[in-house]
Image 1 (cartoon, helix red, strand yellow):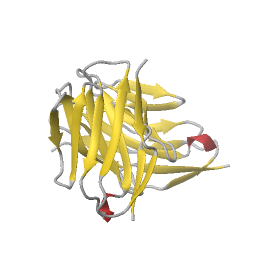
Image 2: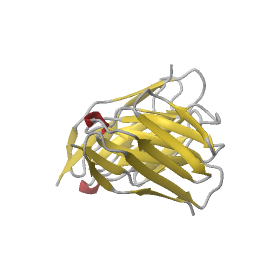
Image 3: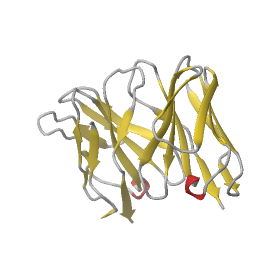
Image 4: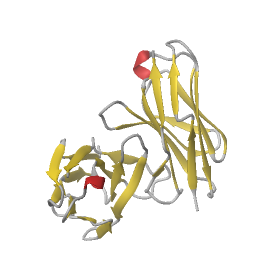
Length: 114
Length: 112
């Protein structure tokens, strides 16, 4: 079945460091891909998305490119801030089915040191 | 704009007591609705989803149930809570024709 695999955390970086969180997916079709962020004690917020191959999603300095050839959707940011500390979830949605079920990765906890 | 509400925000319940968590969505019609559970330090587990009033699909066997009495209301229930029901419960909605989901603020349930 479809699945999403992301790098295990926690990831600890210093402020202004470069961030990469790896994410790969398996799917029978051509899913939409997402990154969600969860700040402590809160629900998930959609960070960015891409709906087809070679699309680049971007938001708040974060970027991810839908790579069909490597089935990847790695999250990157050039210079992280303390406020970026959160748990990040990679996810895929198998097209426009009536249920629109999303498959989530296990989450990667990111901590940024001042 | 659309908003999603969950209540209560936190709940502490004894083992064996009943449970009712409520989720409502505003600003949209005929949304798909979802209940997830997030155990401490872990990922999300889809519990139930609904594509319309009275239509509930269960993803995992458990002592929880869900109901959708109105188009924008989704309720998660249990007749008798177990210790293992503790966790962070998240409600989400999506437009019927798109994959992206939008999450509520969550309910933290502690069963003692």
